Length: 406
Image (cartoon, rainbow, N blue to C red; front, top):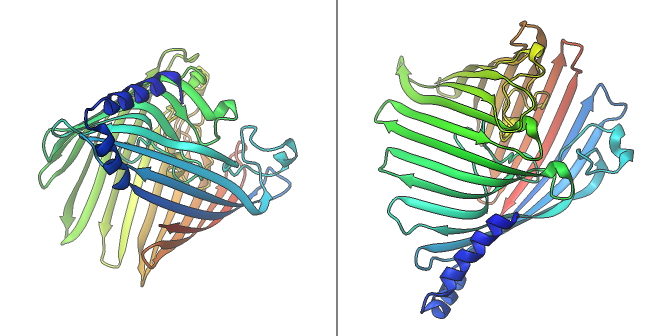
């Protein structure tokens, strides 16, 4: 954790200790605390044409956290993660976290390591307001711009001071100042720890029986990765209606981005997304379109989302973790539903360049999973990317995951 955030946390704890009845109340807060353990095992297989060998990654993540009881509207939270390889370790975990001999394998970005995932002090003494200072999870909207990369075994968290205020049941605003991003590669490599001076502002209003309007500004000043320094301002609307008595949901979103701070590229770029789904009873049909504009003549002037949960977008094969310099359009159709106790989902993506409408490729994504009792779950998932451009290769991925919560 960076010095500025740690100083604020210690100051807050000091103020808590200064309360006259601290000893007894602190004991109560400790005894009323809640402890939780999560175990997540995952096997990931990757067949990528540009590598001579396939990746086989078998990893287990243990997550232990503790939330204190309340005292004078304060609560504390601490969470540790430990990720380890078990059974099979034929994969490259990326960004220098693996030995050079593993460079012959495709990347599965789940390095070994133990991390202080979250630690924060929270205050909720002002009506409708929650203040949180320390290392924390920040998940905004659908995580297209700011998220936790929860699919990977080591989560992305933020050293930040944040405030959420609910004016009423319909209106709320969130603001955070972030001075460090703890990325999925861990603190042992430069790519895993990015210092920043970042402002995240997100405000929403829910219209009764219509939908929710959200406006946001994300000003990222990344000291360690200048190309990620961006100013993004946008608006989104999520709503629902009915068609022939069938529930319909939709999303419309637009954002404008420009370079910021020390970014070496001078550019402006656009983002647009349109989603829709209709519940047909046993099956929900869905379709969508997403645009991240780009201009290859301007040295990589494409719309960027450096804090996003990228695995959730543009195909699960993760071939578009960075926007191509010519931009990207993703047109997709899909369906989801239930088979007895199993939940399933199928998606088909058409992935093209924004600048020239060149065909990058297409992808099929499939998943099926279920809960087992109250505490367990299993998931099977696959992604098959078929490349149609010289800059991409065919990729097939398969996952099996088992989770346990206590």
